[in-house]
Structure formats: C-alpha cells, structure tokens
Length: 345
Ligand code: UD1
Image (cartoon, rainbow, N blue to C red):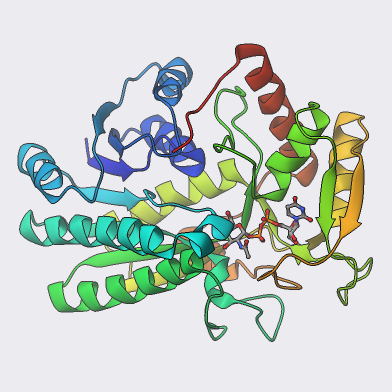
C-alpha cells in the first residue's frame, strides 16, 4: 500500500483529496497546523471512509519537526496543499504569506531530497495566468505577473519546484485549479474558511443562511454578457479525483517532463450573476445582492481548456453546476445545525 502524505489535508480541497485517496486504496497521512481548519474535519473523514488517517499537527515552517516526521515515516508521494490562501490578507501581510507558503514548501522539498521521495503534487492556481489574452486558457498560455503576494507564492512555488525537480531528478505535477465549488456528497466536508469569506460561493451560502445581509457583486462594467466577471467554477469532488489520477500517473512513471502542469476547470465560463441565478434555481432561494465597484486585483475573465488533463490523466469534470450549488448549500445548512466552528488564525 503506497503511503501518501497530504499536507494541509484538513482544508477544503485537501480533505476531499484524502477521502478519494483512501477510497482508491492509498495509506494517507495528514500534516496540518489548524491555521484554517479544524480537528472536526479529521473525524468527518473517518465518518465518510471508516479509515482514520494518520495525523500530525505540524507547522511546516518548523524544520526540526518536519525532519523528525520524515525520519520516522516512509512516504511514497506528497500532495502539498498547506498554504495560506486569502488574497486580500496576503496584500496586508505579505511577509506572512511568503514565509508560510514558501518556507513550508522549501522544507518539504528538502525532505524529499534527504529521504528519497520521488513524487510531488503541488496545489497551484489559475491565478498564475493573470488576465490571459486568450480564452480558454491552456497550460501553454503565457503566465502574467500575479497581482497579490498569495498569487506570487503560487507562481514562485512552481518555479522552485521546476528547478528542484530538474536538479534532483524528482517528478512533480502542478495542478492549476480554477474556482473550486461544492461540497462532499455527505455534506461533512466543504468550504469553511475562518472569518469573512473571500470567495464567491461561501459568501453566497452565508448570505442564504442569514449570516450575511447581502452579497456584494464586485463590478458590473466588465466587457461580458451581463457586465459581471467570468470564472470557471469546477466541483471540488472532480478536482479531488484529478489528484488520484495525477498521483497514479507519477507512480506509473507516465510523465515525460520532470514537472508537468494541468488545468483543472469545467471548461465553462460563468458570470457572477449566472452563478447567483444557478444557486437560486438549484435551491429555490433568493439571494439579496447589490452591485459595487470592481474588487482590486480582479480580472475580467478566466476559464480553462482542460484537454491536457483529459488526454494525459484521463480526467474530466463530471459534476454539474446545479449539483455543486446544491451540495454547497447543504453543507452550509449542516454547518449551521452543528455549529461547526473553526478558530481564526
Ligand atoms: C480567487 C483568487 C485566486 C484564488 C481563488 C481560489 C483573486 C484575485 N484571486 O479567485 O488567486 O486561487 O480565489 O481561492 O482574489 N465576487 C463577488 N462578490 C464576492 C466575492 C466574489 O462579486 O463577495 C466575484 C469576484 O469579483 C469574481 C468572482 O466572484 O469575479 C469569483 O471570486 P472568488 O471566488 O473570490 O475567486 P477569484 O477571484 O476568481
């Protein structure tokens, strides 16, 4: 049984990936420092799969603890999620973001070198493309300079991994997620960030549940069909499946390059107003909203061409937007019932 380390395995995407890895027969170990997650997620993973993953509370900046972990645990592959992800906060606290996201990554890569671990999957973002000149975005679309320190840590992370894999003869995949939405079908895992949500869907679900008075739509003067910005919303369960396929691809040595990049998106662009409408229709609810100015750093349009992932990983998104909207809402309702609180960091 291959032993896979998932850093940040209690987070939104990480937790879904842990479940599908366990279901695919991998022996999963999680490292997380609870900076944007809760121990409750570990219990919920157990409720879903009946398997308790090994768990270590480690801050990846703590080189000694990281080293002690790798000395004691034989690992066949690493999926690295652990990172801060709030774009606005990263502008306020750039050094926290550079230190956390890059130092954590460097410590993990150093351990790969020291303990002969060959396979690495990086949790990247479509933010590395910035406002691309052409839609849909393919992996060869030229990268633009990221706006926020958060985005820069993803772009720099890819550069670091590229140099590292070449120099040390390691194999890596960088998965560039577009906009992950939805929750696990058990409604036990989902997008629960601490504080005020930055992303659209948790903001919508919190407005629907009465936690927020209204949604603010950032900008209606974009050159799009209804004036609001276009993104590619892709279900988190589909994203999770891609990690298992990417891991198998590396373990079976199917990769041609030391570092390969894959877009993970639905292939469809939706405006903010279309998402509100889809949520309302799927759940038979009304979302109160107002229009305000554009959010700084936002781009007009981004949606993916996922044909590379389809061809090489045999991945394609299976979940409709309607289902994602339903599961996102069911998760929010369950959170409210269970008073599932996550401490702020
Ligand atoms: C953001 C990050 C991106 C990160 C991704 C996933 C930026 C510039 N980019 O993407 O780097 O990888 O999250 O975490 O922040 N919107 C509203 N009202 C809201 C919230 C959002 O109108 O209250 C709009 C936004 O303007 C945008 C769309 O909804 O047009 C999606 O926003 P969001 O969910 O924050 O994702 P991105 O900005 O695409």
